Amino acid sequence: MSRNPLSYRGNAAAACDLRQITHAVETLRRHHSNQTDKAMIHNLEELYYDQLRDLHSAETQLIAALPEMISHSTDEDLRKAFTHHLEETKGQLARIIRICADHGIEPQGEECDAMKGLIKEARKHLAETEAGVVRDAVLIASANRVEHYEIAAYGVAKAFAKALGHDEAADLLAETLDEESAADTTITKIATGGLFSSGINEAAIR
Image (cartoon, rainbow, N blue to C red; front, side, top):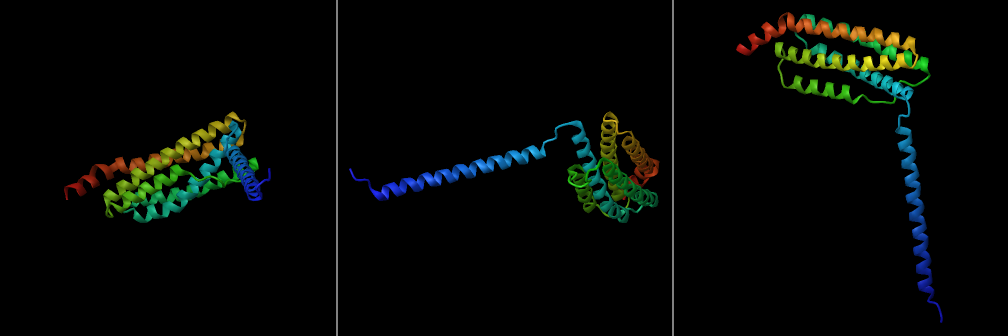
């Protein structure tokens, strides 16, 4: 029986296509497996490094946002507190860079979604208010949220550093943790010392 050459070539082409598809799928699977493996955190040391990079991103974002918060502040004490904390935050970022250098890792590589969200929310509420005591209250509420997040984040990083025997890094992180707690206290005192109880109520009456 004679074989149809066209049928033979068609079957060969189909088999070739199938092999190419199979190879492409296998290559894609291996690439995905490698990418997934790179993204995995395997131990506490890697998790600690991830936290440091996240803090580097958080502080970098905050340094960019604080001048905007200062410009929107009408209360003099609040403006001074934000201005002081901007300089403090620059020092805190320098500490993170120093710690990463001591560990031999790059501080970049993560984006802090939490800080990004907090800043986005603050800008949203700023756009919804006019300059004055109510907007100052928005700034205080936003700053308190930021400080509480940073207190938690630095507390975790410090605990990881201590557990891993990185005592010098733990001490540096503790310095920042103390500064964040003090900043939160200062901002809260501005609010409870008169801004919330008098200024906002007067604005509401008007």
